[in-house]
Each structure stands twice: as structure tokens, then as C-alpha cells.
Length: 83
Length: 183
Image (cartoon, rainbow over all chains, first blue to last red; front, side, top):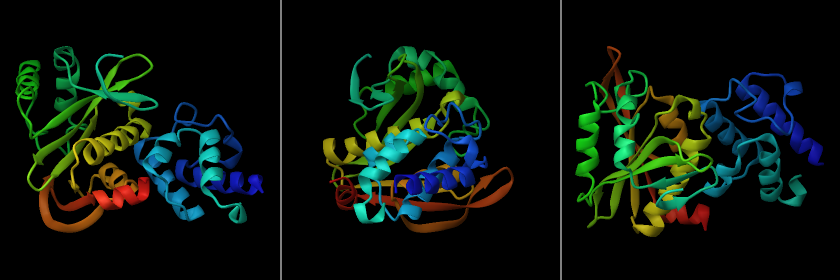
């Protein structure tokens, strides 16, 4: 089930940063994705909220700085029946 | 870390120092692209003007200006502010500038926003934080949307940017909504 979440995150990151899903792994971050700029970062967070129908707290938002942490925050926020 | 006012995960906010004012701060405000959407962006800045501004902050209780500093190496990368603080009606206007372009990846600006909103609502006990932005400034629109600022209205064709008249969007975030989301 977690793989499904990961795939959906990758699809969003792929669309926002205009890269292939194959280029995205746990270490993907602003340091490894060249197209990761300020506007795309914020668009990614909003897209994640819309895709998973969650609302991040301000603290959550500050944690969304790489693929690994995005997964951790989303898995914490999502009820078990939506994983 | 020097004199932190609030500490985050990647950055901390502190009162600006004279060294900040003598450093790159004044150059950020002269940079055409960085200052494009700022009210002060049309006039060249200087170290002397920046020092005047820094000195004006000491006794001013209507404006909270904080330096954004990296936790990793203490580098000053930008400033964030609550200005026009109205202590009777308890509101202020938020503004941010990430001057160091290498750190303009979104993660530092969003953390600075999260920290200053915490200061506004929990430490200064403000009831509303306001922001206006030029509609053409997609970064400002995106960060305000991210932090759930509500659009109160639009001044049509209020701003003149690169020879084009642009709308100015008026937004605000109230304390109750912020508490509900962050409680």
C-alpha cells in the first residue's frame, strides 16, 4: 500500500518538476533536482494536499524537503483506510 | 547561532545585526529581479541607506524585522517582517525577501513564513496578518495560498510592472483559522 502512496508522490513530483518518475528516489531534494525552485516547491506542496485530500500544518510544510520526508509526513497524515 | 528569536529546522530568525546591514542586504534590494515587486525596488539601495534602516528599527514597535539565518553555517540569507503593526486592532502586514539566490528553493522561505506566523499569533498575540501582492508575482501568490491566506479583494491595475498595469491582490490570515489548522 505504501508503494501506491510513493507512486502518487512520484507522479506529482514528476509533473511539477518536469522530470521522469525514474529520476526520483528517496534522496530527491532541491539539491538533486535542478528544476526545484521556490515556485515549484510551493506548487508541489499544494498539489500533494489536493492529491491526498489532506491539509498540512505549518510544521508539516517545513518538513517536506525531500522525497523520504514527504513520504513520512504523508503516511502520518493519511488515515489507514486511505493508504 | 547568535541571539536566536525563534529556531526552526533549517533556519533561525534573529534581530538583524549591524554586520547584516553592512553585508549583502543592501545589494539584495538593488537587484532588479529581487526587488521587482517591492515598493522600494525602483530606487538604488546603498550600505548607508541600509544602516539607516537598521538603526531605525531599534525604537520602532510598529515593525518587526528579522534576519533569516542558516542553522548550518550562520549565513544571513534574507529578511522577513511584520510591518505596520497595529497594536489596537492587532494586525500586521507580512513581507519576505530571500536575497541569496542559492537558497531560493522554497524550503527556506516556507520555513521562515511558518516561524513568523507562529510569532505573530502566539507571541505577539495578533489577530490578523495581512499581505498584498502583485498578481504577476507567482511566488508570492503561491506561498500565501500554501499558508491558507484568504483573498479579500483585488485592486485592478494598481501596479505598474515592466510597463504593464497589473492587479494587486489583498489577502489575510486570521488567528482562529491558523489555530484550527495548527492546533
